[in-house]
Length: 203
Length: 203
Image 1 (cartoon, rainbow over the protein chains, first blue to last red):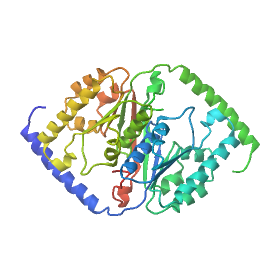
Image 2 (cartoon, rainbow over the protein chains, first blue to last red):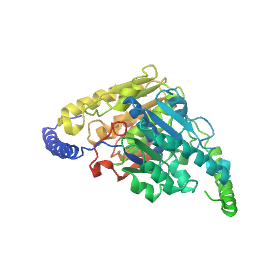
Image 3 (tube, rainbow over the protein chains, first blue to last red):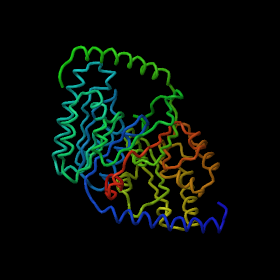
Image 4 (cartoon, rainbow over the protein chains, first blue to last red):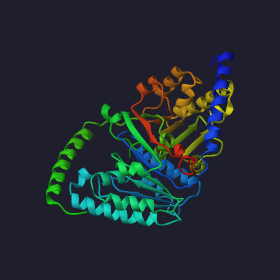
């Protein structure tokens, strides 16, 4: 890029101010604690973000757990990948397919309750530092689980344990309880242009 | 949860309609091709989503490449983790720190250009099925790279290669070129409540 001493100088001044602001914010944010993160919205990236954080947690040597509340037609790339590390990740795929595949509400409820039993074990284990509850919001949205019990179990977890909850349509009470909430908005999606879900991206 | 035959019946009818719609959409989306995904916005989850998709791609056995345009103060969990797999991931951390840390525009430009040279090699290699260009949007937003050259290199990549571009403030031209774009909106963030960035979640 072309040189411009004036622009460089303005850049320096702006970045000095920005560094001061950020350093102060970091100094004022001293707490270490387990976070509850909620990833919701219609856009692509909710579950993949949870699995990226899982990789991060594994990089730091944490013991991790995953419960997938809704199973697709086939094993996903994330399942194929993270099952390679049974010593570091307890990986549970509990759902019986997307709800429009089963078309059976009582079977979906039973599957969700079984998935919550497994989740609760992870949420009671202080050895587990990081838990992904993938598509839990969908199970709650359909009324497959009792919201109050779920929130109580989340609140009773070990204080240093991080939990990531994904799925569109997060309940207001879940958002209220969470420390960090991202709403993923769809600006556009390849599906709209007639492109099928691709391995590595969606699958 | 309590039983309700009427609710179950309504559920069945709704899910039958939904399955028909989704099956038709899948049948009409037959194309396989490499996608360009852009993950932008102020919310948490952009880079972690890219790294979750990287894990997915690895689960499917793809060869992958990562270029991180902006380096934090320390090695991140994702770097620690994905460097475990040199046979499947070429991992490059090219930035010189956050731009408010360097405070030197010419040095940032030189770092961004070196990072783009490495990126271009990945974008010309048909053996690489999946490429993460982490925080590329930031380098473009600051004018550290020539936008037209970057877009031309992206368009000239192998047809089956997926590329994920992250960073807030995506350029309109990048959004235009992309197949799938997610805007991650911050609903709330633990930082606002005085909680420091946590290993496994942000780091």
